[in-house]
Image (spheres, rainbow, N blue to C red):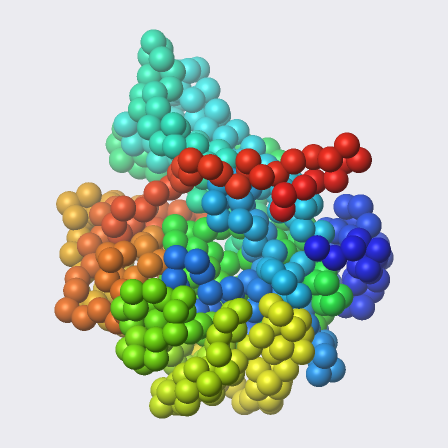
Length: 542
């Protein structure tokens, strides 16, 4: 960890971006929120260049997209460019479980790690509070006579918890009462409120989106929204401070907006739109990441976030590594040198390159260098990647900081004409057709099968007026398919959609494929066992 005295006061970081002091809300010396109203005053400023960091299909250990995004922001500043990074903030449940933090590593990380990794500025708690407040209002409405005629068997809204707790996956609420029923808890990162927070452009948009949440159907099959329960204003008030983007810094002093934490496999996997939009007005280059690989993170970033925020990405970096190439080439030990497996794994990377090109976005491949990687093997892999028709760079930002990514930074900084960026499908396309396009073009599937529950869900969604929304697919990140066991670039497979859920406030439909856990559990020995508090108040073990 960096010594705190080496960090700059957060006011200095904000001043370097041109943020007026009156719009800064400090949280101690090294963290702050930036008043959400700042964006409204920047509308006439030209946007900087937006660069997405995504990846090929990963190994179980991950490929370091966050570290590389942070490092590239430092690299851009080393070559004299005004750059900032935009990241999701850590989710406390997975952090205390097994995933670890989301603050980067080595010489490419954000600080202060302990504060960011634990409760940061309280946004996740605000999301959970607002979400569970809505649950309490629904049950209170039933208790007091159910004037809206809510069908208790068609309540879509589920409670959430910020911590991993498998015991909450299936519970009964209201025991012994008139409205006793089965309930399930989701992790707060899967909450529609979290997605709404990350797709809202201002306070008015936040309230409107909350009001549009479909919480249930009535006895006639009609929609019951939060606005009809008359508490959209209260829910918005609970999220007032959470809408302000968070500002922190890297250990080399690069500014980082760290805001919002939706999961990438079950939600949109992107940081907040308001923080990205603000950064684009303040910096010439903005580096941001999307959860997991191109068929999940990048597709949702392009088709949902960019569509919602009218964003036009200038380029994309696909993160790979020697170990991910070996893994998807079928190596028995993906940590050991195996050029044959690495070459076979190129098929997976090739599909991800094709996915980015499908959106007409210029792409480069970054081979994230890990300890033990040999120069000769790296050079050989870079030569193989050239056959895919994209530039490739070996990047060592973890061990070298910003100087380890200068070559890639110079590629990012090259001037580009408008790239013709376009979406994968039009909003007016039928729901089944949207899902089929995603499966065929992003995953390489032969087709899609819809379970009976999904068929009814889609029929209801189109009847209720949600058919024009984009689709957020929830599936495994371990494979291009919906089967986690199919590594590499599988062929001849079909995707099965089990359920389709309207997220009217967030503005998308969620299509669930395969066994997707919405509430993780803790491992036998969670990372929380290593965390402690010293007598002087210093957090240890992070």
